[in-house]
Image (cartoon, rainbow, N blue to C red; front, side, top):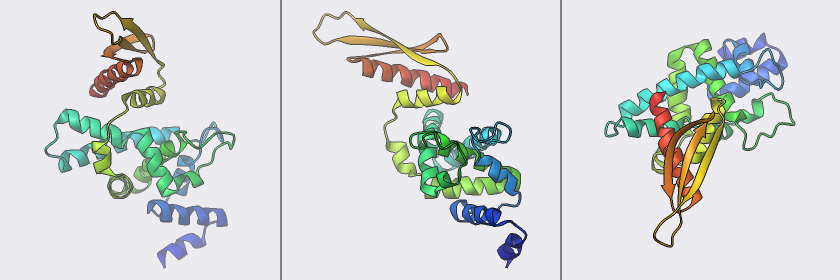
Length: 235
């Protein structure tokens, strides 16, 4: 009876959104405006969009995932826990989870934007976490993240055992932090016949770590790996 009495006072569009949110994320909103903002991209509204909620949701997500991994992976050291967390909260995984949940169908955005291979779904998911936190509190946000994002929609064992594409991870991090990423690659002389390359990661004009390999791709991947891990340890 609670849901029916709650919906009785709402407009038809609000009723539909409330039912969709309940079905897709398992939350019955008390403050619907928070969720509307979480689902609004800045291409629709410069004043009321989801970036601030995304910022809040990102912080909450990282904190709760960190605690979850700490409690459930007692055999992993700090370095491994950091790597696992980075995969769970990566834009690739968040986009995949948001698509599985059907959140993309609720996002308000300018239709000329390409949804496929964009960060819109993952960003909206983080904003929804921020909305749940403000609307329902930390405990409800934690339940949503653990039950839905980790246990139901993220294949945690696959995430742990999948080899990381560090170039993609570093690019994703730079895009999120609004940093400019490039590589400087040089071919080194060797005594043998096999070529040898050295790559250096450059972010905002500053050189970070270098990597070596028998191809440009391998050298860049190694440089990205060391640089990405260094950046994770700093944050």
